[in-house]
Image 1 (tube, helix red, strand yellow):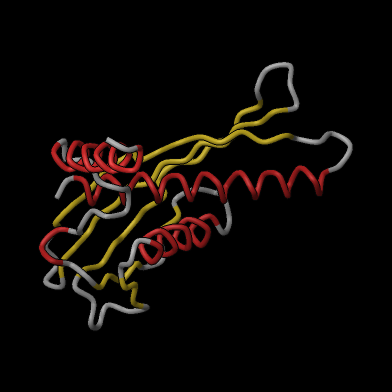
Image 2 (tube, helix red, strand yellow):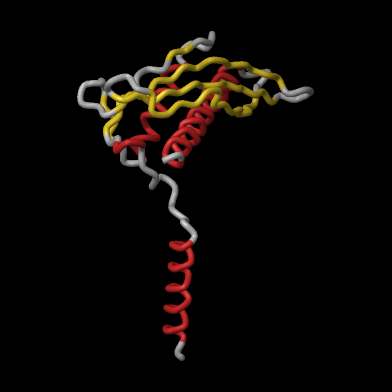
Length: 167
């Protein structure tokens, strides 16, 4: 058997293996009940962190769009509405270090057009560290904003995976 046939057979065996074990690439899950168009409304922010609702909402809009879901600006024409509430946020200074950590939690609900809850999760949370520059407050604020962006993206990814894997 020549090397091309061996490579082809190995490749074919690999394809059969991954299809048989249920493996799938991330982002290929489907939303429940045939939902294809979703409206993601501005998250409610119950923390003292100004603007966090916009950062988190935008991360969710990006994540759903990136995965091929049509995200609409209003409820009209949407199959479902995703609502979110940022319930808690805290910031910690890591002992004897210039590192700081932000932590926040989000509650989520996916509702059909008639208001029926199809999916929900409470306390989806995470943390992200950043460097606090003692001599440079503007750099600290830049690092802090980046940490919020990273954590918002991570929470939106985890939420999307959880939503699509359940169905």
